[in-house]
Length: 294
Image (cartoon, rainbow, N blue to C red; front, side, top):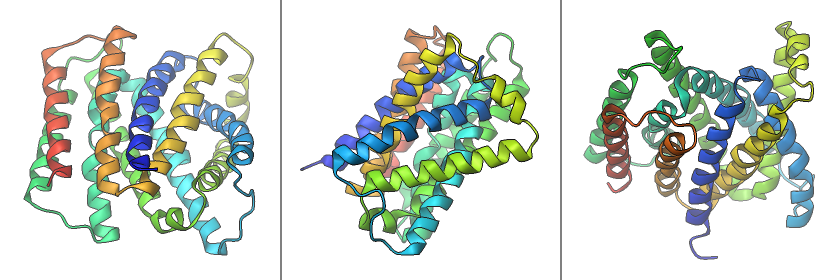
């Protein structure tokens, strides 16, 4: 299908934005680890019938090292990166998280250059500077009620580290995605991530604490829909976009999530629409466009 990768990349951006808004709404009920565990469990349950409908085998005939690469990718890109993202979201709110998310494009293209050999030109450097400026402008904004400047700075750092981890996790499996059914590959990533997260929670001694969060409550409905859009749909579409089009093209289209999150945060969560936030978004998005139109 023509432009399948591009359509999937835009779908990933929109569904991720919806998921972020919903995750923010249910963040008061969950700890970052608990929410990560819940959303992964929902996605795993949904992936099995999806594999059947798509006609993809549960155990395809692929080299053993593909399994190991996908598992490592899932642990880094979901267990680690998503937990850091939820920690950042709790500190920043959805609007400022959208600003931090703009670091996604330069990180992805930098990793693509380092790992896949894609070239970096002057426009990429200028774009990265604009995005760095956007992060500084956004992090200098007045903290939300109940938050401190320290929350904003720490949240921004955690968000960027999480995005960097996610970028490494996808670049390291580009070859695997080109050679395997992508819904199956996505399923293996998230199953490995869930197993690693359970072990992490148990070894940290927080098992009972996290388990108490799973008591049925009103937050479950919001958490389910957040997991459906922000994990199952977004991750499937994101992996598909990376598989069926160039990393640079998919990265720019994924960056549309910044605009979607910013609009939804103002319309749904009633987060303030300040001049500083608008300036940060404009700087960041201009930088992302420059990078990909190099």
